[in-house]
Image (tube, rainbow, N blue to C red):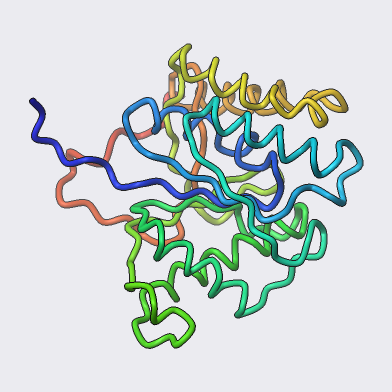
Length: 241
């Protein structure tokens, strides 16, 4: 019987029903298959999108989360393409962090050159992670304060990758992981029938993997410096050329 502590939950935020799967689905598959609980919070139902109805896209997101081994909820904020950075929203997200008490939080990057909802949600999650720690915030007094361990940003598109941060590369080369990730992306039928998003994301993962001497990798960008108790925890460098 293993004495290893159960890994802390993973909480992932997405602005639209497909952002999480396209942006970091491979990472989710790797974590859940290692025994980690994952929960998605999707902050619209894609109602402003060109393809698919909100009902269809909600169903697609639920199916994709199941394929990745995650649970999912939908949060009503300002609606697709109308999201604003407001204190009330950050507090609402902080309440979710306090309720679920995750160790790691993933959110869209805050780079401006992408769908505006992505960058705005990233900023809101960053603020929420701080607010969740503050014991005196009156709107959250009914929930015990909580400090997460890490906040990482994911990039839904290449343009959304921060240029001023060195990425942390996650090895997702396992065929089982790639299969689960591909199936989760394919569950978003309304989107992949309009454009080959799956091949775009797999190509990005192949290129990142080639950089590190592996088959596939996914990039996450830390919000702040990471702290290790030993160099043995730090993995290896990606340079292979």
